[in-house]
Length: 299
Image (cartoon, rainbow, N blue to C red):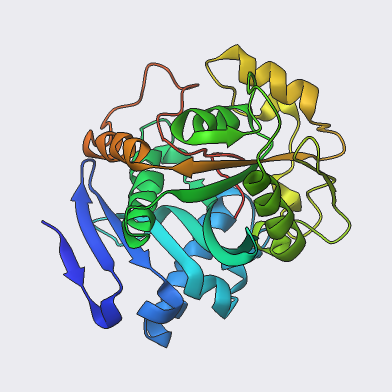
């Protein structure tokens, strides 16, 4: 059964799931949680990052402890039910952008890290779908823009097939809309620290590519194409190989919208649950949003 605490109208929700695990969704933890519990959460998040990437190597965005990032995030985490140890998390973050001359809020898909022992079990469904569903509900079921920054072919493909009006993507006809261009200009111009991109990185406004992207705290996530998870649709693999310079360390930045139809698809995937056994197809990523670098996207 769901256990829900409603302090200040924000959620801190727990749910047992198969395999001796428990899922937790924390809405805006910087506001929702009292300081001791917030510090405990931050220690757990950093612990997962240290095991997945290396001790102390990831401390940007939410992991920096920045109060604004903690206040604007939605965190989905997985724990061992017996010990309470955090094994995985996804951290989406709301970002303010300039859109059609007015301030608007979009959602960046965020950093997703999964302990090696739990990969290829479909756990990204719980980690990425649930906070996205919540964000859409909080937006009053109105269309909501999402962004994704990644160099991983599997990540680009999952994002492109999950949302509507995604740009860029292979086979996309025509140029980006004014909204696409405004969102990219805003988040790269104002929020690059949120996803570990340094000031020396350069945006290719035509291709939606951030060149030399791994210089702002995300350095440990940079990898060669051969080490990136591939998509089952070869178009995305070939597209990334052509679009990005992996030696330099490029990322593509994608923009797409969630609508009622897409929201229903995401909800259905979440309700299908988590596979208790290892998939026969480890290259496939069943989550509706990308898992990006080392089973993670950038936040």
